[in-house]
Length: 95
Image (tube, rainbow, N blue to C red; front, side):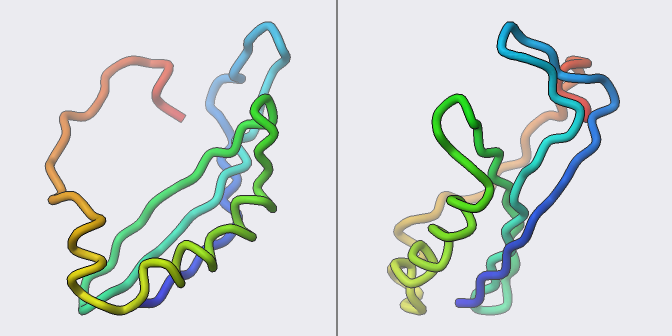
């Protein structure tokens, strides 16, 4: 299995405002996993409120890749069959 990851800064179309403050940029992590000819993309959105940081996510990902390993049965048993989901039409979910 091959895992690549890196910073993904998303400038929000509208600032995200809550009682704790306002966010103009989502500082996320983009993850790409390749295995047996398949490629999957994922994204992590660390929350400072819960003590998460982009750096801590990035430092944990190599351990996750190692735990998954290259055994097809291990990877298959820990993943779900992808399903197509309807696209959200709520304005708050659009970046």
